[in-house]
Amino acid sequence: MHTKELIIEAGRTESQYWKDLWRYRELFYFLAWRDILVRYKQTVIGIAWALIRPFLTMIVFSVVFGTLANLPSGDAPYPILVFAALLPWQFFANALSECSNSLISNANLISKVYFPRLIVPTSAVIVSFVDFLVSGMILLALMAWYNFVPSWRIVTLPLFIGIAFAASIGAGLWLAALNVKYRDFRYIVPFIVQFGLYISPVGFSSNIVFQRFPQWGWIYSLNPMVGVIDGFRWAILGEESNLYLPGFMLSIGLVVLLLLSGVWYFRKVERTFADVI
Image 1 (cartoon, rainbow, N blue to C red):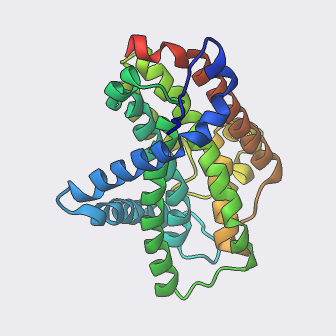
Image 2: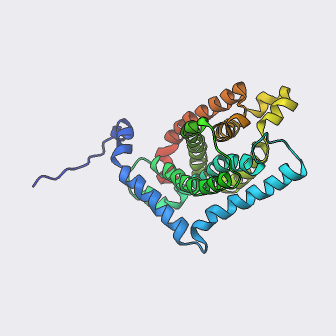
Image 3: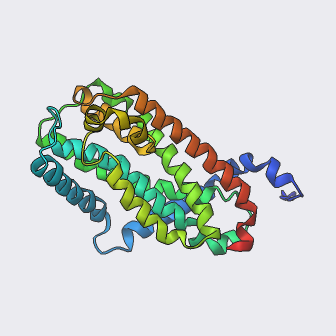
């Protein structure tokens, strides 16, 4: 009987790295499925938490920005305007939290077994995407409650989901790699998430910024999540949300830069993970 042997030679793991990502795809499935089961089985309220948190956030933002501040939302109900932004934002925020701790929480696996370390943080993004899908049920319920029918633009939503994935993975790779070497980043990530929520157009429309403060539009668009959120609203709200193309292109360009630089830096320091962790 002939058995296959895997021989790891100097330099071989580098040349075969991207092929190994496919060869170790079952590990990717295992890590993602394991974290999903832990997320929903070992909690008191389980899957309901993925619904309660964004729902309560949507109510607070609708009251503060829609009722008290009386900010415009076009003809779209303000709760739908908010939730169309909460979906990509919470996906991004959860991905940052999951990715930043993913390598540390899998330290035993990383220090003992060879596999492309890129699998670990990317599998963590899948866990956040499951929360995204669950939270999407609230958006469907809101549309039914307000009798809101999306336009044909809704077919472009998978494109913007892909952009949200790129932003989440890019930022997640940076934080995952930095957290291995500088453990203080586990305290910085919650601040990044909280601060990012305030400077992202979650509770308000980007049109307000571009119309009232046009001179600051390009600085505002330096936030990669501006393009992601505006894209979601453009797809979901249809004619009720106008896409400011220059700002959108700037944000998307930064998402691409974030993804490419994240992969580059992660690969640069990846070989040191087993020693440092």
